[in-house]
Image (cartoon, rainbow, N blue to C red):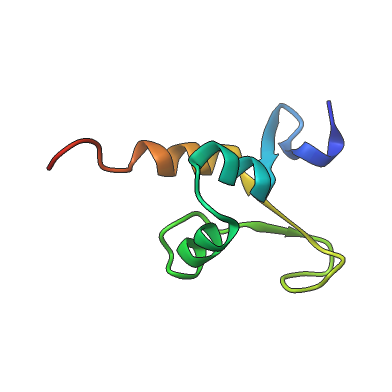
Length: 79
């Protein structure tokens, strides 16, 4: 497995981490839209790998499971 894309939560459980480019391509929205949704608590909070938020040596990732759960909760069709 690729160490950079998985987080070990326990020896038997692995979670895939998504990059912003993967999310924007998948959802068809811009980087700024994702970050706006995060700041408005509309979208799952990211994980910061490295020194922390805003640091140029940090990487931002989202837990795939959380993004899928968020997507499943979105309204569909006319309401």
